[in-house]
Length: 82
Image (tube, rainbow, N blue to C red; front, top):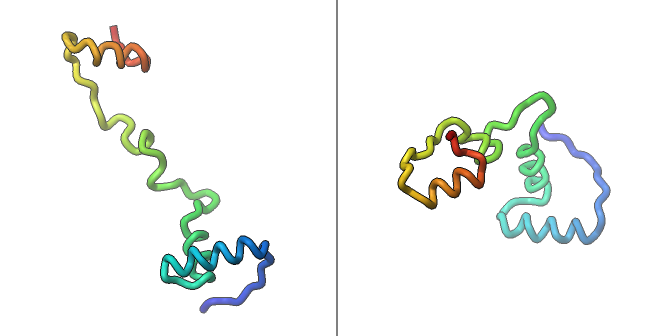
């Protein structure tokens, strides 16, 4: 069961929130609820994380030593293994 609460916001924030809610076809309360649900809870790690964190260790670099651009990019980003 949902509860009623009272919050105090700037009038400009309220107007902006109402416009965003209208654009998303939801209520102002629904918008706030959705935004809060998206926030990480204490002690809970984010599932999605950043792109680099999600893909770390899953991609491998080509080992084509004749590709000059590849060799320059590996050197620039500290990925040359030589």
